[in-house]
Length: 171
Image (cartoon, rainbow, N blue to C red; front, side, top):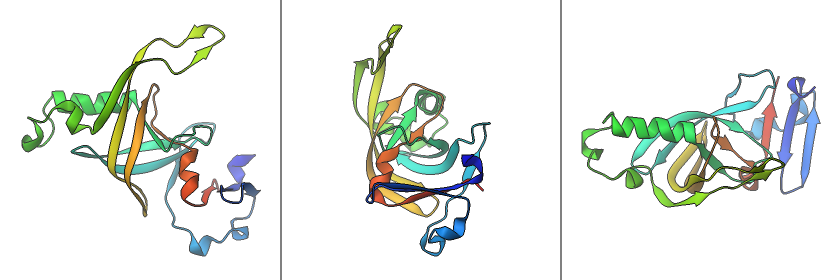
């Protein structure tokens, strides 16, 4: 079971290593970030902080190795941010800035990204964002381009593996 394992993703070597012993990895060189497991599947969750447009905020995101993006912001998170803006629960100096600028929205489009046996997904508005600062634990990224995703959770995808090894210690 993966819940009792340590998994290392090494994109450069095109290798995934699964071990029951964390000592088989070079932990002394690893920047540690707290992982959270909230569901019965032990989905890995990271706490991230970011500056999206003019807004600084933090959230818990899932790591989804099947998603090929870097970061996707969920409609739930986007709606929470829009509520804060609409209810004027943001600093007074930001209240006259447009929603698009406040959130760092670069582009938006209407359509669907997926189809299934039962037909196409309904058309929705999708957004592309510029995130000036993105951090989890001691790992920082600048000027990330992100997209919105329909779902409950924002997520970090496999594109992050282009920047180094990722080790998930489920133990």
